[in-house]
Every structure is written in structure tokens, then in C-alpha cells.
Image 1: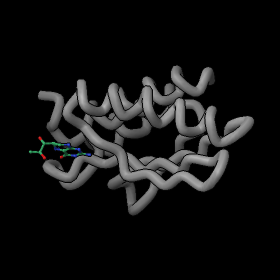
Image 2 (image 1 turned 135 degrees about the vertical axis):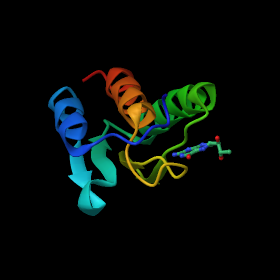
Image 3 (image 1 turned 60 degrees about the horizontal axis):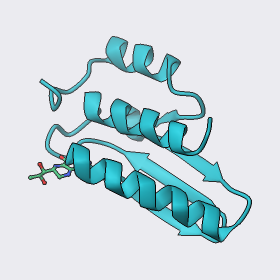
Length: 98
Ligand SMILES: C[C@H](O)[C@H](O)[C@H]1CNC2=NC(N)=NC(=O)C2=N1
């Protein structure tokens, strides 16, 4: 099930396919900083990611300062990482073009 918590091995395997993301909070979350050419590009990324999050019913914890967006993903209901975090991270990488 999408909201089943991933075990350590599954997390390592998922991270291998997630360029730029790193483990955080003792493996309970993944994080990445995205840097864009300007604020409009950063906000455009956030807009697309927000629509994807709504579609997945799975939402990021993120901060935006001018052209950077810092993202933290975890599944609150599971108290750790699930397939949904991996899926959203992959979509974010695609929106950012990397
Ligand atoms: C009821 C619950 O809030 C919803 O199922 C969704 C909303 N978005 C969510 N986002 C994240 N990151 N974790 C959740 O557990 C989660 N739950």
C-alpha cells in the first residue's frame, strides 16, 4: 500500500534513483535544495509541484527564498518514508528538469 512505511533497504534502493535527494531525520525524511535562475522559475516549480501533491494527496514541507526551494518529504501518517515520498520527489526532479 502506498502509505506503508519503507524499510531501510527499500529506502536505500529508492534513494539510488533520486538524484540530489539525501536522507534526513534518522531516515524518516528525504530533503533536497532546488536552485533556479530566478524567483519566477522557483515559484513556477512550486506551482507544478503543488498540483502534483494535491493529485497524490501527499504534501511537501518546503521553504522558498527567492530562487531556492528547500523541500523535505515524509509521510506523517506512517511516521517515516513511503512510496508517496519517492513518487513526489521524482515528479519534483522532473519539474525541475533534473
Ligand atoms: C488525512 C491526511 O492528512 C491525508 O491523507 C494526507 C494529506 N497529505 C499528506 N502529506 C504527507 N506528507 N503525509 C501525510 O501523511 C499526508 N496525509
